[in-house]
Image (cartoon, rainbow, N blue to C red; front, side, top):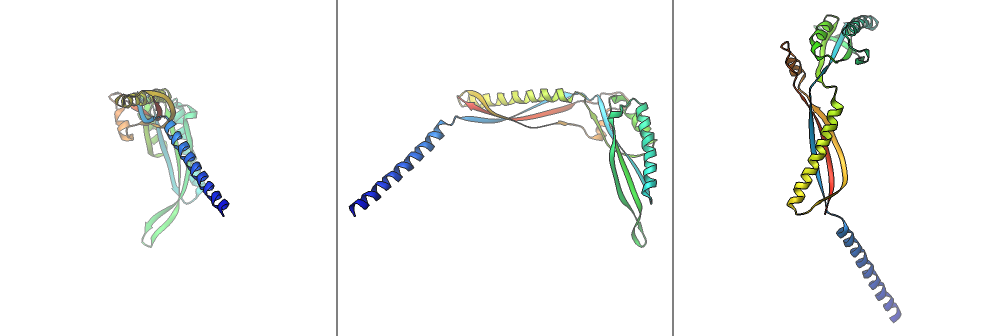
Length: 235
């Protein structure tokens, strides 16, 4: 009986010792974790639009799909020939978007299907921003039903984004240094950095078209943005 009690006593002591050891290891790990700070950096760069992109819509209504397709193809060929004559590169004319939908009309008997609506979208990018009015007027005379989008763009967006990214990193470093200075510590090595998102702030389609008016005024500037999240060690 005495031997059994001693065994239980020693087992309890071992259990307490192991628990204390685990707790000590956990506390040591927490104490050894370096102090760190995470900051968000944002940056931007300005670019002046030097090109434009426009999406034309060709649309035909009728009872026979094959006939609609023939008519639509005719207008597409006319439009493409015109764009090429205006020095728009063939690779900057995209006409892959095609949609077919039922065509309904309201009648005395109720809503009735009259046939089909065949729609095709043609996206065009032109490097001569001053020719936008000529391109649009000519397209509307060659079967284009409407314009679904018009935007001024810059061909130097990649370099502008690189500069915006550099500015975002500098902003993150500046914020980290400011916070560390107030805490009387020093900024150490970079522990982690993540590029969050980037994009450009553009004016609306109507505003963009109004900017490039007959007076020849400049179309303004666009802002290319970049954002990063950086974690620094604190010494």
